[in-house]
Image (cartoon, rainbow, N blue to C red; front, top):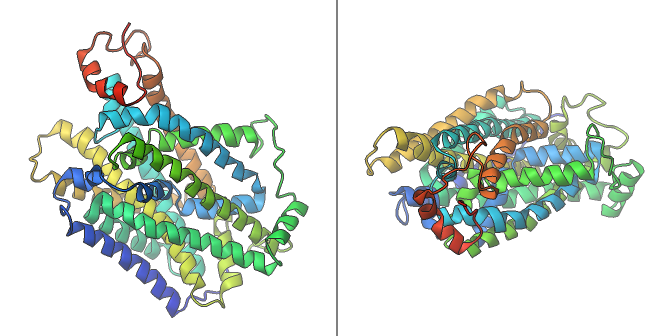
Length: 466
């Protein structure tokens, strides 16, 4: 890797980012209802504004994995990856019309309570455990990713950077609850945009403008959208990106508890739908900027690829290497870049701590023990903190998983998120499926109709019965 050039102003920016995030957590801990109830801590009293929630939806899964992985993906394999944003657009109306009304009508703390009503307790516990495993593995990689950047830019040991990011995030999210998570996401999303925009503008400037970036990418066969080969072994095609991307997006935004919980923090179903619709262009803009930043780096390094020259050990180090190699004399830019990468991970981890705490209290603790109402909020904070520490442990083994961080993340989503989407879809779109698939479920269940009566009035829901 290149020589390190982190200066005082860069450290000031990093420290300031961490301090502001902690301050937001402290503010919401000691303001309003002071997080004295689980309704406020986990659901923000269901009265948040649309725009902060929309941005938070984007930030929850757009982590350092996205910024590092997608940029290098476009550098080595071309701009065709941007096609995946069409898939997100196709999935959004499906979520708002078919999935969201069911969850919003039930208004439950845990998304998996729906599956107990639909299939029974065993399916609820199995899917809840699957979600927990998915998020623990994913967030371990999310926490590991920025350590790559800090080591490349400053020479700071990965262990230290993992501890700093993990402990700061665990502290403010455990303290301030959902409100702290959502409003820190606003700051962190701005820094995420800024970090990739800096790379894009600097790279375009090095080669004479964005037009030259596109021309160089065309010459290097990095802009080829005519990829309709049905061969499943080809890395990226329209079929894999649109169809696969749509199901990935559905598994994350339609039934994943981390996102569903955010969608329930607003007061009405219509406002919740607007959160999703606004989140899509916000996500697409970040995705497009990140993809173009990969092409900008390619335009600069087209004749001296850092990986081929063994300047970097993996593709995940490409963007931080570029920042150090090309931007080291620009005061403060290194700090802004690292702050953006850190912010991308902070937003994802804080969201997961809060969401996993909700699932744990509702699906496991609440069913096994009778907990006094007065200690439930404190217990929830303790559980959220515990998950943050678990993420730290997983991060220390993430570097031994093999492959790029983007590949590892998509593997986890496919292996664990796909089956969860299938179970929810089976319950919502069929009336005769049960745990064994052999006979009808809740054929004449008064409980089922009582629980879902409001759902049918508010929006689409499956009709159960003859």
